Every structure is written in structure tokens, then in C-alpha cells.
Length: 213
Length: 213
Image (cartoon, rainbow over all chains, first blue to last red):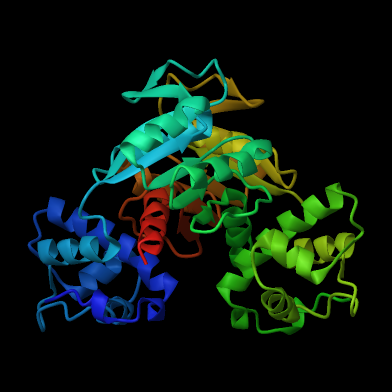
């Protein structure tokens, strides 16, 4: 069982496959906690709410996994998916915007061991100085200094829409490569940065469309 | 310009198209606020961060939109997309779980006019009785009574993982058709209900994978 991503043309791998790997990872971790050294293919499929053939097809992009007729070795498959996603070592993350949504997301990601939140910033003086979940909230003006020292790779944005462009530009300037933004606003994305949005309203609309089919 | 969804086999429309309609809607609303009665195809594409041809292809599923060489009539296209998504009348939503994440999501959706949050529930007595964003937080034991009276169509869940199955079963029993869950846990989904997850960690992992390509 060898991860062979490096020998593949990476852009051939569908985005949906990569997204599902995260799901498989979380389900495999549940299995590990339950003490299952091996997870059968039907059980993993059931836990992940996908079909067995889809799991097989997704994993085929990266190598050969599974023991015929038995299933997958839980620990090995976890390690392989972690390697594929690149999360075998901690990812340094900073937060911009520490209002209610920002704080809720900090609390959420704090529990996941491979996310290392190394800084949280806000423009609102009221938020600054406070400690939240063990992280000191600092004024955004201190972000460049911290980024220079700590070299975070990713940022999460949860600020009012007006400030999005300025924040994205600042993050690009200090070397952030990927941004997940809960703030939805028109923005020109600088080169060398990937900006993804979490659009909760769109998720609700999509769901509403589906229940009406 | 006529929406013809009803004459189509709806399951032929890709999920990604439906998801993008929400994005188009939000970008069109920005255009409307800016006073643009007509949005050119390149401008809409730029605002939505997609290609012109993709917008055209997505809209083709539903009818003929746009004025040759000019673009789209903003108001008309907004109305058409709202009709396609079914959000031309308010959607009744309830919340289960009013901790920090639940409250942040309530605050977020509260600003969108077609989501009508008719109830918020929590098992934690400390949360109950309080009013948040104009919505009284009630004990979950009162959920069936409220649901019977108000007939909400959708629910948002943001509770500790242990309670997910019980909550999903309760929501199915009271007639909820669609659930958006921020709680990630293994769950058996009852028939006649669609359960989607918002997996913030998976979004971060996906982004991390992409920046390393």
C-alpha cells in the first residue's frame, strides 16, 4: 500500500475526491476510536454515507488500498490519507476577525490536532488583549510582525464585508497561501493565493432546492 | 426569458450548477445595490469568480437569459434564480443548539430576508429563556409543539456530537425535510429527510491540499 500521488498528474484528481478524503479520514478516526483495526468496505461506506465503489474509485487515484475480502487497515489508511492531504505535520493558521463567528470557528478548529492556530487578530480594540481558547487576540496592525516570525500558511477571515479586500491584500503580502473566508464580498484575489468561501446561506439554498425536488 | 425548470428532468441538473446559482444571486444583488440595471456577462463572471461560458452553461438548464451583446437584466435574472431555487417566499427555519457556533450562524442568516428563523432550541438550561437576535431560546422539549404549530421546513444543528442521532430523529418526526448540520458525527439518516454537513475542517484540508499543488 503505497501513496503514489507524486507520480500522478495532480490536476487529474477531481476536487470532489479530495473533499471526500476528509470525510473518509474523519470516519476512519471514529473506527480507530472504537478499536476497529480493520474497517470493512461496507462499514466505511455506511459511516461516510457514500457507496463502496465510490470509496474504491477515490482511493484508486493514490494507490492500492485494502485487503481483498477484508477491508482497510484503519491506521494505515489514515496515515495514507493524511499524507495525500499533506496534514501529517501541523498547519499554521491565523484568524482575522474575532467576533462571534470567528470565535466559534476558532473553538471548532482548536480541537483538531493538525491545525495550529498561531495568531488571532481583530481591528476592533474591544476584542484586543483578550485571550480566547488560549490564544491572545491582537490588533490587526501586529499581523505582519507575527506572520514574519511564525510563517503561517493559511488564514481564516470572519470580518465585516467592507474590510475584505484590504485584509486579503495584507494576507497575500505577508506570504499566506490559502484563505478560507466566511466573509462574502466582491474581492480581487492577488496572484499566488487561493481564496475559498464558506457560504452558509448558499448551503441552505442548495438544501432547500433539494428538498423541493 | 422564462424559467423552464419544471419541463426538465430535474435530476439532470448538476449539483454544482445549483450551488453556483446562489453565488450568481449574491453577485447580482451587489450589482443591483450599485444601481446596475444590466450586468454585462464579463462583469458578472468577474464578480462571481467564474468564466462567462460557465455562467451561460449553468443558466441554459433553466431557459434563455441575457440580451445579446449587452448582458443580463439584473432584476429579471435575480427573480428567475429565486424562482429556480424556490426562495421567492420565506423559508421557515429552526435552530437546534445555541452555543457559540449556533448563535454565530443565527446572526449570519438573520440578515438574509428569505430565511425566517421561527425558533431556537437548546438542551442546556443555561441558554434557555434568553433572547438572542430577537429569537427566544427555548428548551428542546418544546420543539415538537412549536414545529406542529409553525411547520418549519428546515433546521440547522450545532450541538455536541453525542446528541446528533437523537436530534435528527426528532426533527424527522416533526416533519422537517432538510437539515444543515455543523455537528459531525456518525448518524443514520431517516427516510424523507436530507441531511447535509458543513465541515469546516474539511474545507481547510481541501484548501491546504490545493495550495500545495
